[in-house]
Length: 136
Image (cartoon, rainbow, N blue to C red; front, top):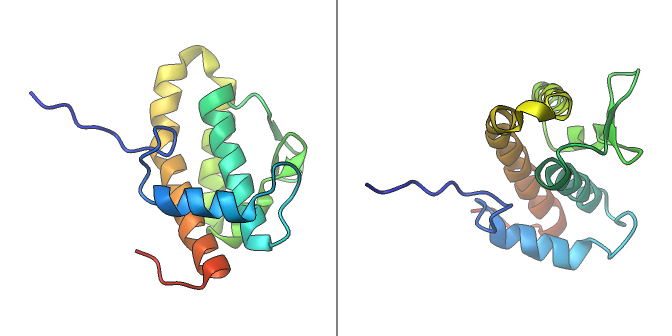
């Protein structure tokens, strides 16, 4: 019986992996914020993704004003690339994930697909803004 391989950016085979790598290499500095807004949105989406996969969401904090931050930087910037509904869904899933680390496997499966979809969308949006070329 064949096992279906799940494509993720974490595994290095995400839907827009080549674009992700090119954007990162060209527009994201070794440290600090990006110069271009689209690159910064992409960088923050990648930080969220990394924190979920690598740190279990330990750097994510809920803010009083319905925002959420990662290491003190607002993730509200993601709204440039995704709609409000997607933003609030990923925000809610992220909080649940971070709070339910005891049941990591179930929480991970709940957040994996929406997180991949958000990064897909941000990569396509950033590519269009920064490279001005058509996407897939």
